[in-house]
Length: 56
Image 1 (cartoon, rainbow, N blue to C red):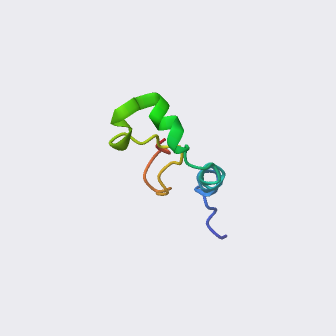
Image 2: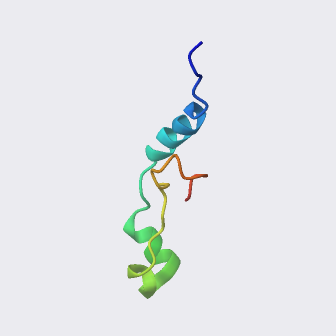
């Protein structure tokens, strides 16, 4: 009997999350002001589906 993949729901969540686009430049300017260059808003999660939960 073939082994069933248990990672499929995680991969589907990742692919759905990867379709979301990065926050526009004005969003982090509004949030951080002059410090916006050093602080970027991360909208997309990291694309390592093996590394535990999705980080935002």
